[in-house]
Length: 203
Ligand code: ADP
Image (cartoon, rainbow, N blue to C red; front, side, top):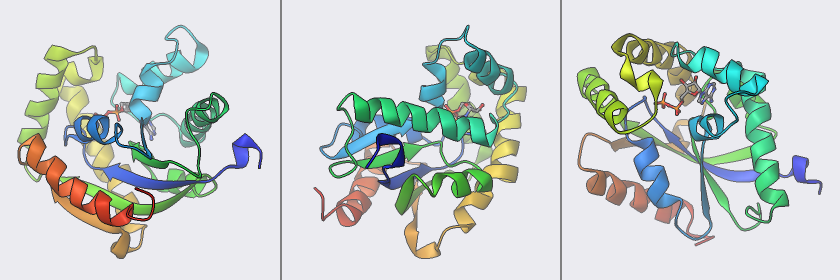
């Protein structure tokens, strides 16, 4: 099979900005047979002077989503690079996807590339907790989209309008809710239980 046609088994880390997907993904990506891929990280690692890098910034600094086809193309080309470099093998690895698919259109486009075996929905019901977490993250890192409360609120609105519908487009039996308003260790414990059951045949 050619690299670009390979299909992957995938677990989705799903939830609003600030729910802790990145923290959990970074840990779980260190497990054998798991590869954590965060769409935001893939975009941020691009050359900021390139056309695509500039296009990404024109959306992300306003809290808006990058267009669907471009996003999936960038994701696939990143994945193909990992496969060609020998870092990723669909017969060996399950993808732990963070931040993609993020719209109903992306669900359709990603069907050619992934089979979703589980969606881990990290839930924090209090929006002020999310905003507080994102502002805290801005103090530590290089995320201009976390520094401005207006941009943070815009991202939460985009989540409600475009991303939340992704959840109901999947069969409910695939989705599990995780209480993300607990310590990162407790969230990890809850996620690990689900990973153990859905990846029992590979790990
Ligand atoms: P957060 O989850 O905190 O919003 P991310 O790092 O996942 O942060 O995304 C940062 C930005 O990258 C988004 O606001 C958006 O502009 C862009 N982005 C990331 N993933 C996608 C996606 N699947 N589709 C479109 N744009 C995306």
